[in-house]
Amino acid sequence: MIKEIKKISNNNVDFLNLQENHISIQLSLDGFSFCIYNKIQEEIGVFAVYEFENNSNSPYKHLEQVKQLFDQEILLHIKYESVSVSHFNNLATQVPKAFFNKSNLKDYLQHTIKVLDNDYITYDEVWNSEIINVYIPFVNINNFLLDIYGTFIYKHSSTILIEKLLNKYKNLEGDFCFVNVSNTTFEIIVMKNTKFELFNSFSFVTKEDFIYYILFTAEQLNLNPEEFNLVLVGDIEKESELYTILYQYIRNIKFYEPTTFPSILNSISSHSNFTLLNQL
Image (cartoon, rainbow, N blue to C red; front, side, top):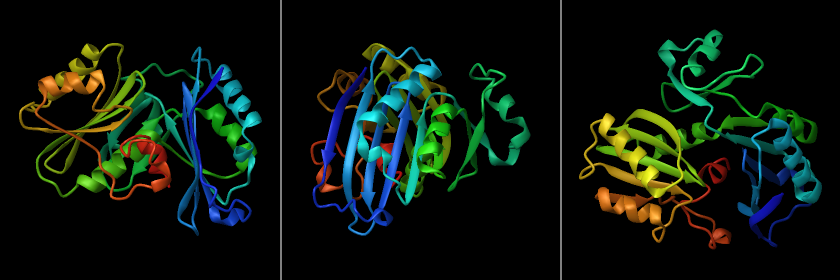
C-alpha cells in the first residue's frame, strides 16, 4: 500500500518546456520522494513524499511498489532534461581516499553489514573531502529508472548529507554532531575542528534508544554533552519527544538553517527532507 504524506504543486511553473526542468528522486525501502525544479524560473514545481506500508524488505516487493507509484503519478513519466537519484539505506561505509582500492569494495562493506555474492557494490567520491563512500544501491530500482529516463546521476543519500554539511561547516571551529532523523532511523555525522570524524546510522524504536546511541557516540569520541554543538536535520521537531529527551542531556541544540529555502515549501520545516532538496 502507498500512502501520500505530502504533495505540493506550484501552478506558476511551466512543465511544457522540458529542457527547463530537473527531477530529484530519493529512494528508501519504506518510501519514495521526488522534487521537480524549473531551472529557468528557479522555482520548485512539485514536491511529493510517499510512504510504502507493510514493506517486507524484499527487493521484488520494493520494485512493485515503485512501479505502482509510477503507474499513478504521470509527472514521473516526463522525460526531464536531467535526473538525479539518491539511495537511502544503511548499506554504506566510508573509506579514506588514501587507502581506497576499487578492487576491494566488498571487503570494506562486509565488516559492518552482510554482503551477498550477487550484491552490486559501488562508490561515491565525497567531493570536498578525502572520503570515499562505498555502498549497495537499490540496483533493481536503478534498472527500472534507466528504462524510464535513460542516463541519470545517482548517489548514496549519505554522500549528499556529508558533502553539504562539510561544505557549510568547514570553517567553523569546535565539535559538531549532526543528526538526520527519518522515521525509525537516524544518521549521525561528527566533525571535530573542521575535520570529518565519523558517519554512522542507527535504527531505534523508543526515545531512549535514540538518546542512548547519540550519547554513546559522543562518549566514544570524547565529546562533552555540555560543550559540543548538536545540529538536527530531518523528521524531528521541537515539540517531539525526541527533542525533549535530547534537551535533557545536551546543552547546545540547534536545527539546521539553510541559507535559502523555497517559499512554496512553507508548510514543511526548512531542516526537513535535506538530501532530497540538496540534490537540486
